[in-house]
Amino acid sequence: MDHEFWLERWRTNQIGFHQAEFNARLVHHWPSLGVPKGARVFVPLCGKSRDMLWLAGAGHPVVGVELASTAIEAFFDEARAPYVRRQHDALTLYEGAGFRIYCGDFFELTPRELFGTEGVFDRGALVALPPQMRRRYADHLLTILPVHAQILLLTIEYEQSVASGPPFSVQPDEVTDLFAARCSIELLERTPAEQTPPRFQGQGIRQAGESTYRIVKER
Image (cartoon, rainbow, N blue to C red; front, side, top):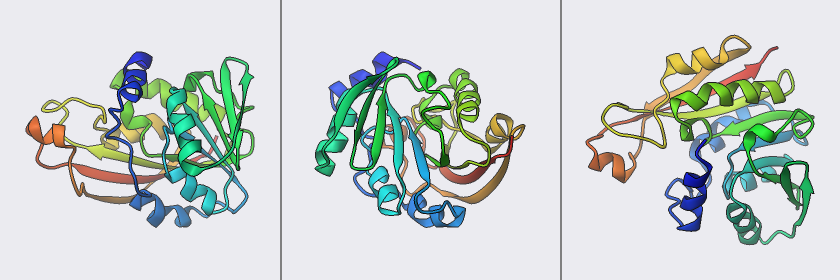
């Protein structure tokens, strides 16, 4: 993971990946997972995502991890939520109003930070990583998650040879390759993307697909 690339994006406010509204696929599909109210939910590479507010509104304590402290502080400021900050091993923990967001490298997380987690919402983590990093990401995620945790995974699919990420194209066979050995996988929805990123259009991508998966860690 190129830390400097993402830190620079936040420093210069190049955050076109940030969504001002709640993610429609989250709102539509999350209830079908049946994650009980009160169960902890993890949002990897969370940025200042408003989806964390939606999950909190659905009754979940939220744990996130994000590289850029600027993003975390913006999340709490925009939510008008007080927080405290303290050092937590190699990470910095921001905590308040039902949110625990760790600032630092995702790969520094251990099972201790995700103890009791029953759900994961991954809209922008897997697709943010280049191919050589996605295997490491999936392996670490499954290492730190409790058995039976459910992942709502969102991906985008387009012709990778025509345009470069992020977001990167993640095809269905790669999702199977990354998760099937330890998880069950269910495709919930596959639709044409409502709008491809403008820079992709400039590179010749006129159509992309979006897929939504329910992944359950079984061992």
